[in-house]
Length: 193
Image (cartoon, rainbow, N blue to C red; front, side):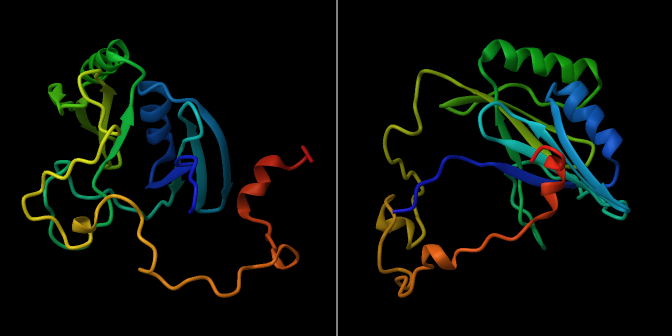
């Protein structure tokens, strides 16, 4: 069984890092904690409490995606719908909704999703955002709930990972064969080693 800790970072794209910083750091209140760059390419990181980061690559020729309502079906190439960021509590949720409204940024009314209350907005890059906080009435993690009247074939097999659906590992990488090569982000720690 493979064990996960959480999402380390999500990497998104922008063509204007300054506008992105103004939105994510100054309006949303996320701390800018790191950045690297080369000519025509930057990568900056914003911190979420815990282990999660939101990273942005700045690519000057990138174009924002067309506006789309989160959760609505789309046609054509698509790999991403929206990013949901959980707030610590309802007070922070309403404070953020008020900040977005005061800044003239489009934001929906609050929506009761049963286990969370949510608002939706869009960042300057066209990225659909959901902000939520958990409500005590229901815990989506406490049991399996499949309410799709016509679930996919794999979903009919239940919630737990099934063995035998992928080939077994025949030759695991031995400890003396494990190699890790230097990556671009090592630059963030130059002079600290």
